[in-house]
Image 1: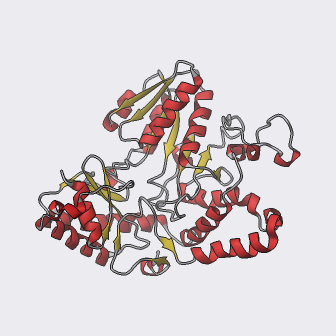
Image 2: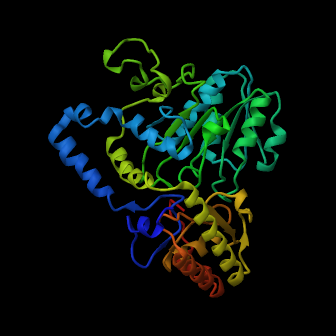
Length: 396
């Protein structure tokens, strides 16, 4: 069993703040500054360019990829790190489309908009008659027809926390002759995932949310072993080459998922992520899931008992949601600003969603009860009417 009191002590958590926004940006592990300082001073500072070999910088994307692979149920050697999530969505979707003659990409309106934008951009670039078909999340299964070439879904809806059945939808897509690309941005580190057991073709995700890698932390990509040697790397960068330092004039894809590397690894960002993965290496994901469900159920019960004006916007059943819960309110943005001003950090998603993330690594019962008290004060005292809480920042 995981000792969550012990893991909470491993994070920098400002006093007087309940942080229920780790599903957007995870808090700072206490070990991160020292790990980054080591990279800055000892590796970059003392080894200089020699650190690429002496400190193992060049191997970091695959080495850390395997550590993330454990968290998503991937086979060893089939996850690599680098670039942004949007780039990894582009790579995986382009590779999947190259494996089929079908022209339809199927997604849903609960998908993160960037994934849909990437699909639109790729369609415009290919100019091959492809189309993006977007349906309601509840209609995805019925929309998987023999026209669909690629199913592109985010497992957990970023607004409501609604969770797709990855195993069932992947099986249905394969039965219909389609491939699957799964975005695990709100899954990795939130609950147990098994891309191998589910037969997923491609999976991508970010590391700055539940995995606490910090702002700008690198994304990851998984390619199933059966596709690893034939997946076409549309972004054929030099580090995806089979022999980068041969400096050949033509591209030869690297072996397996390594071909999905593009440019120079973000060494400082990977150092920060490594400090967080040291914590994750000690964590039982089944225990994380169980505790997350318990805390969310306690939170929902508390909010509904004290705040009748808030409407639950997430599935009530734990099986149907990820590790976040949302409530809707017509003045949700101002209400969330008021919560933040009173020490409860969540976030707002248009048009009316107040969103709260639950990461047992640093959230406990006391935090949940304090959060409920703050929300109740904001609702009962109608603090959203205070003009101080009306302005919208660039980031909500």
